[in-house]
Length: 616
Image (cartoon, rainbow, N blue to C red; front, side, top):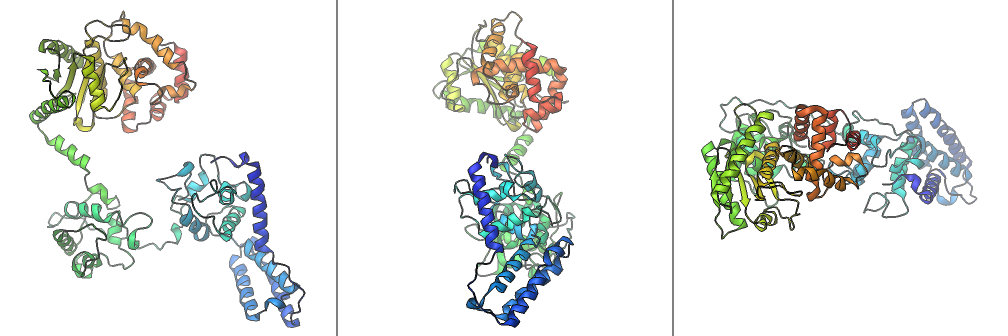
């Protein structure tokens, strides 16, 4: 959404429209010469005189008195039953004065403006979907504006995008998007509200618009479970309620005006007020709906509730509708573990021996997807399970190197007491031919083409359900573009060690840390050529802050640049500050925020410092 100043012709159109709209509202059409009875003209004159007091009353905050004058005028003129052909100048004066009086009446944000916005605008401008970064679901959000800045300038509707977008001459630019233009009276209501200073007459500016008009139900009494119940809400009721009921009975338009997003809402009930009566299923309307009516009315649609589930609900209510969760204000959905949470619990309960067996089977399964007709060699060390197309002695050499490196890593970056780096061992796939390695990217990673600069990668997800590295055996000698096999393996192990909790970290961070911890000697041909490659990759960077943004560099470039960035961050505060940065990233995957917190500097400033530092 562009600022209004970018539309000079549009502004002219809007000003004209608003002028015409105002005139149409407050100006009665000219009347032909007619003659009203003297007593009628006298009464209209008296009413006109009273109506002229309304603006003054509004200024003195005597709104109710002003409304009463307008209401009285409406009733009296209706009783006069003036025919169209009788309306003369006295009528025209009266009508104009009446409309002007109505125009200056305060517009209620909660009862008038909110109703228009909720009906026409919230589908695109809400918390879940905020088009142009603009929300209209709370008064506070309206005040903040959107991508182009403020959308409401109090007392200046001809500068307020909220009003002007409603009358845009271009249908593609006019709001509501993809819908009919609002009625003139609705637009005028919003214009008047802005003209009056865009006041708020609700209770909480952060509450949903119109919330103060919704009748608040009395608080419910939540009785906690004692453990003596035969039916558990958390185990026996919440799971099917989340899967079958919450979809319809949640959000702003809950079916039957009955939301059961939280346990408190469930007990609160709907318009009937007796949806659930603790201790009395016979008086609980929900039992009728799911168990006793013929035909059953709930659940609606194709979803089916088992008889055992409906009976459990009846028993739960009879036992007092007790709650065995932690927080009755929390979403009921939070009581029901997701498939991922169930899988995490299953993995956590596995013994070390079972996990090791799982890892061995996983290695064979993954390899069959890559090369179903080839059986690889294997070698097992305390923390690694090697599988590949090189001979066993080669795997042992690499395993010894990886085991030593992991010990050094754990010394520099200690693990929590009693915790192993890789549960059930880390799988290491080693291919003799590069073609086989590229098959990993094609088949498992869905990468059609593997850049020549990449000879290995790591994969580890939450709870270490899957944990492996795959690499091409690059030999024992490093080149300007390739690490030796042991160095490459050290790099991949370091990357996996950094992300062992399954957190997705930026590629520059993960690969840069891997290269830094790969144990490259100072005279490494790969290390000596790295700065020149990185400088070439960074030549097109115009915004220093974007050095830390995921996606800035191609897969073949990100490792080199990442090495220099990680080395720079290490120099700014040592391993401890770097670990703090990574910890913050694990909790909130926003590099800009994590850099600001850990290094007390915005990314742009750190980027500029990096470029000036000459780190190589």
